[in-house]
Amino acid sequence: MSLVPPGFSPTSYRFPRGSILLLVRPMKTSQLLVITFSLIAAFLPLRAADEEKPPVGCLETKSTAMSALRAEFEEVTAAFHQALRTNDYEGLFAYVAEDVVMMPPNESSIRGKSAMQTWYRTFLSAFRTTTLMLTDREVTVSDSWATELGHYEWGLQPTAGGDHVVDNGNYMQIWKRAPDGSWRFFREIWNSSIPSAPPPASKRPNQAAQRTAR
Image 1 (cartoon, rainbow, N blue to C red):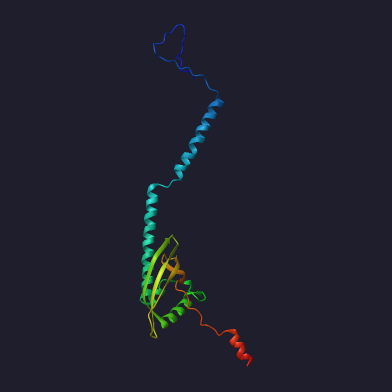
Image 2: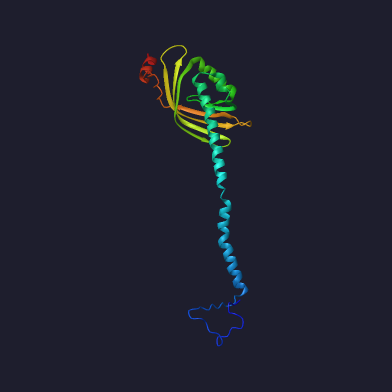
């Protein structure tokens, strides 16, 4: 390829003053191929990166959907804890999964909805909830699971009379979405931050030994 006009002869043609003549030497096919493939290799990653980026509209739609999911979960867990505050047995267990596992402090694990119902009936026979405050909550929600952890302050009144009890500590819950899309209380563990009462002082071993010797 040449940009020189056909029939050009340096001896028969005068260039205007200040003009520039560009002579292009023909390129070999192999050189053209090298340049072509180099350009393709340079631009392919850029195109791939652009294709991997989701459209802005998709990101906004997903963010809106997750916000709605979070709001739905917050509504459910608020109703669940309100049922606990008001000692509403039926309202509480309306949100509990059949395969629930609960781990109270100083007790064995409670597995299954039926076992949890038995535990809660026993609890209600001894105590009634008067107040329940949840603070420092950290909630994570996905399409199928949600976790909630935080600090609780739980006011309890013994049914047999006596002093009002206030417990406080930390808790963690796991919720799952059922096939019908509803949220179900699935796992919970909590522990009290109040130190346990010391065991009663036992008699000294040497006193027991002296009595035995007599």
